[in-house]
Every structure is written in C-alpha cells, then in structure tokens.
Image 1 (cartoon, rainbow over the protein chains, first blue to last red):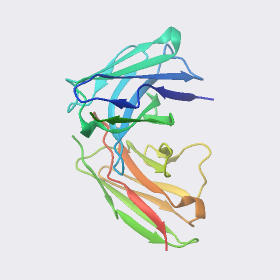
Image 2 (image 1 turned 60 degrees about the vertical axis):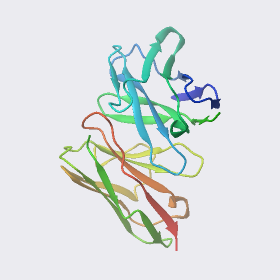
Image 3 (image 1 turned 90 degrees about the vertical axis):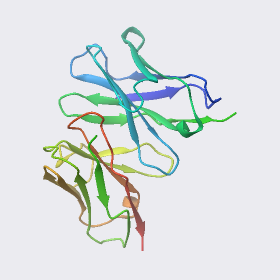
Length: 120
Length: 107
C-alpha cells in the first residue's frame, strides 16, 4: 500500500522560503517508472501542478513558478523535498505530494495535504 | 499551456440520475486525460486515467470516453456518495493542467 505524508510549516511570512517534505512508503524512488509530484490547491479553486521528480532524478517544473521552486529527492530516506522562495499571500494553498506512475501517467495516490498560509 | 474547460461548472441532480461532465482541451492530448473526485477536506481521488481506464476499486457506474480534445465522464446512476467536485487533468504535456472543476450537488 502506497502512502504519502506532507510536513512543514503551516504559516510563513511574505518573502520567506517554504520548505515541505513528502515522506512516503510502499514504493521506492530508485525503481524505474516512478516519480513524486507536488501540487497545490488554493481554497475553493482547482488543483495546480507544481513539480515532478522521476526515479532517474529528471525533474519538471511549472513554467510559471520555475524561478521560485526546487524539487529534490533522498532515496535512502524515502523523502522528496519541495522548496518555494519569495512566498506571497497568493501562494496560500493546500500543498499535496502524489505518487506518479510514469507509464500510466497518473498521480495516485495523493497525500492528505498540508495547508500553508502566507501572512505577515 | 494546454487549457482544459469543464462543463458544466455546477450540476444539480438526484440519486439515480445519469450525469455527464465534459472536458475540452485547447489542443489535442491523445488519450492522456484523468478524472478525479474530490470531497470537502480531502485530497483528489483518481477515478479514470488514459481517458477511459477505470482505476482499481472505482465503481463501474463511472465511465470515461474521448480522445483528442473532447472527453466525458459519465456516472450511470448517482449514489449519495458521488456528490462531490470532479476535475479533469491532462497528462500529455507539461505543465500538467487541470480543468476548473464541476461541483455535483444534490437536487
């Protein structure tokens, strides 16, 4: 059974850097055809895809946020870390990580999400 | 970026009804489309991938069709637990964009 759990701060100030950790079990990021993605969902809005890291360390980023975000993996710890710099109130959202099947092109399952509020 | 437009945005229906939600892509995406169901306070749940393949464990009353630019999600006979918000997502190219959502409410 695959499970993912997001952790990190619930409140950040404008201009600060957000760092979130996705801890997972039930799969290994050293196995081919696997990835972990980060997505977010502002309150009352649709989800937005942010970043994806593959088993071979290939990475993909949302073009609109590429200058602000970074995704890395620690295979030995079964963790993926997401950072976003220069946080702004419009970045307030629930942030999710999700398992990605390369061949099927699916994000499944998702973690339960963590609400991050950006406020002074 | 590929834009996905869902219709309708809101849908009011009764238990037992058959409902269809449409997702249109701004350019062709082959069959690289997924459908998710989301309930309040929960993460989206994958229902269908590759436009028409039912995810394991999802009831057979859910079905998906389409390819290219037009896709549909059909629920053949609504059950009380189906009232939720539904999103489509394209997985043909990056960024992996979502539709704006369809909120399915009880009439």
